[in-house]
Length: 580
Image (tube, rainbow, N blue to C red; front, side):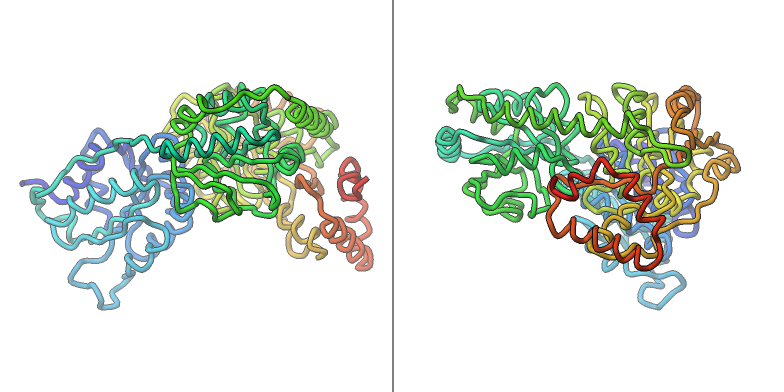
């Protein structure tokens, strides 16, 4: 073969459906960069930080099924790590190319040398380094196969000298195979499951992202069983829409209605969920879990049955075995509670706050109204997740991306970069915390360079809001959570992006509408209320006591104004805190 190894690698990427490589070029990546430049079917995206590249690839992979990022020797590898952890834990099929020093320098302590096998071991399904031209195509095929079929990260180590060598023909398959299998429980297991369901009256269904492709089957099941449907954060967009039985989320960001439905039921069906917050799962109910990954069965709750199967095909076979229930009183009671919860959520939408203290709930609700039916939202970890989870509504076409399992800050803006490349023509809205966007401001330049029409909305509460709340609930006065922020709108303007600031709640609707009408990237800096609280669905006595203790400590420390501001900003939540 007359082509270089780098060219052969790029051809295999293209054949696997990879459209771009997110990376900072240099040193050992230069041959790969040149091979990408000469291939019209793939493009290099020049991010400013490799972590942003890994996040962007994770978002593209979630949307389109496969994506690629790269990092060069040493520092470039390490910069990838956080974004790759996020991709891996989210199940996003990402190929990370880790170019490194020449093979002759391995083990010599050479400049920027890292051991890629050790470095990426905990955030990958496949992690190998090729040292000969014969190894490279076999490893590339295997890496892509692992990423797609195991759903996670594969790392391909690529020495700089190998990239420039003459390629050799692969002795095994060059092509990748993305076939899907139908997985469902045995007939005997399904019969036992049906008997258990038929023998209980008050049933609650709780869905995760693993049930997203089974929306219609889950709704049909709920109709037969007269069962309310709750869901996890990742399960929301696949389950909330066109669903007369839904009662919202539970968990740290959830609502009392879903929590109540689970705790008042006789039997709970956990469908395609690895919901991690065990304190929100009842311990005195019959629980059935169904998942495509059987290793997850039983690791969050004690089960009466744990079944291996995909939700869509399992329910299709299960439904004919069920006896329709006539009594819908339990369902009606849960839906009534849900309506009351939604009324409560609307309080902070109607009351938009005051100058420089706009209610973040009102901001999120307005974004929901302005967003298109097929918009893609990206959410920073922290308070943006709270407002997004409660006020951004599913349509069946919208997508919601975030660091929902890894829980990293600073993900929303780089996720939006990947989403914009993956879905040109769709509206991309990034809900960024001021703490999160501060970490990755440099990649605003990436958005400008490629003129990505992203709506970047900064919830500027001048604090690490979620951390502040955690400390107060634990009875600790918040310390070092306040932030002295730059003018984010001016920073955007300095980078060539339109930037505006909204600090008056009376102007919120008009200014956001103008921002959404703008043709191009725009950053909207919204001055939100730093004392807004996100109450979980179940406020325990120790949490209320912790908040009271924290407020007392602040008062004793002379911070009377801060205590008063918190009470004023959240007077509507006092019933939650006091149990009244």
